[in-house]
Picture 1: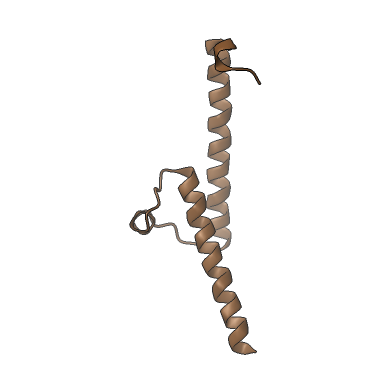
Picture 2: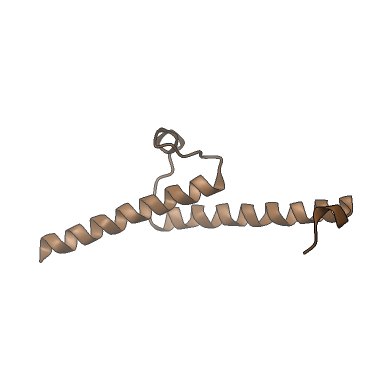
Length: 82
């Protein structure tokens, strides 16, 4: 891949655009997962729990934590029925 020192300004700009595109696609995918599982995205709730809404990494961690809660509740319901 090479170091940044060996790249022209145009190459650096192109790479940054690709990175931004992939970040946008990741965020969109996370939002679609949230919709699929009916996870409500509440900025205030996220921030109160220590997550930064603007951070893609925190947004992904928030979605994961909500999916984990859904699975935990599902397992508890199965155990109650047994």
